Amino acid sequence: MGIFSVYTGLIYNDIFSKSLPIWQSGWTFTGGTGVGVDNGHTYLFGLDPAWHDASNGLVFANSYKMKMSVVLGVIHVGHHFAASDFRLNLSSSDDVCTVSSSSKSPQV
Image 1 (spheres, rainbow, N blue to C red):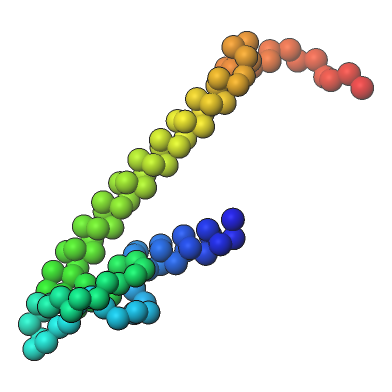
Image 2 (image 1 turned 180 degrees about the vertical axis):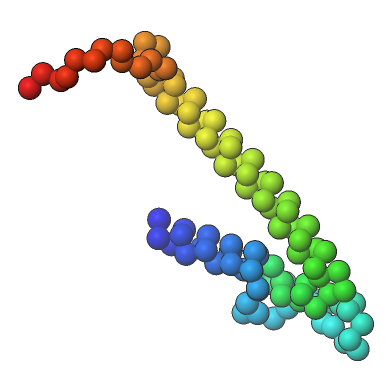
């Protein structure tokens, strides 16, 4: 569980925050034009930090974050519905949505 937590934290911080240039980028920028040339490398983890130097870097990053938020939200809601349906199927039909109306105190 702890390893997954660290992995998720690294992915979250790498994608939704400032990327850490741990490995060599897959793009090379020359001349300050904002146009990258593929150098044959593949960035192994997270979002390639070269996107911050691209001419459309901000547009790409914001679009990517927005799409990831929708995907993660749908997964979260889907997980909630699956878990609540599982709980509903485990419980009996008598006690699903009932509230006790007795005002008696519990017997000791």
